[in-house]
Image (cartoon, rainbow, N blue to C red):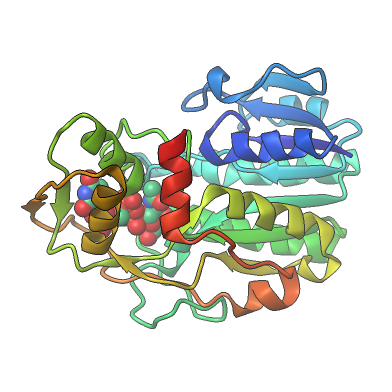
Length: 304
Ligand code: UD2
């Protein structure tokens, strides 16, 4: 199979690339390297790396010749950035998706798997989050992800392009960059513990999240391609388990053999109190469920 991965030099995209190469496929990475890194990618004779921008429809079209499957991971992933610049973010996160879909349609691509986000649920209080809930978006990021899901659905209905949308919850694993305050909390905590610095906990630490290891997210992408029952659908990609931030920090400290008291600060504006997913739909139609428990995932991360 020939696959194209947008955002393939980024955290999740580069793990998808590794898996596709391991499975014997030909892979094109399409990445603007705004946050993606060359060092996330291997030197491989079946890998082509294109420095390109998903705002550039022609560049996408040129690179989709002969491609069967597209994994669309490219996005401005920082929610605060999209709040600062909703128009610029929309050009990437929504219109960019439209370009990917249109180029896929015009190139005879069979299937597009789209990286959506738990952000679409906003702070709708119902738990666990289930795909049938009406989303209550709280940021331009979430609006663009939700709009992109709708675009995927209509490209399937109107043009017959097969699409699958995966709503990632809190993904963690190797190559997640801890450098911004809005990076995944696990990468930030790990970095601070390694440097002997005090981790900051925003709020009382009792907020819950559904942390999913990156290899499980990769597997969900593979299932999205393999299972025809998934086509045209949206799925939560999560474990179905909730962990408080205090529990998370304690587990991380225990695994690293350190004893650190966190610095408790005011809860972040717009922070969601509780988030975890119902994963029944993914089990039924995608035939996928998360394999790696938080503890195991943290051990894998720390062994890197
Ligand atoms: C996740 C996604 C975000 C968006 C959002 C939608 C990540 C990295 N971010 O944000 O893109 O989809 O869900 O709901 O997956 N925290 C600390 N100390 C720190 C850093 C974070 O206490 O140094 C807290 C933070 O306030 C939050 C929790 O840890 O309560 C998780 O933070 P996060 O940034 O990893 O993820 P989240 O759920 O805010």
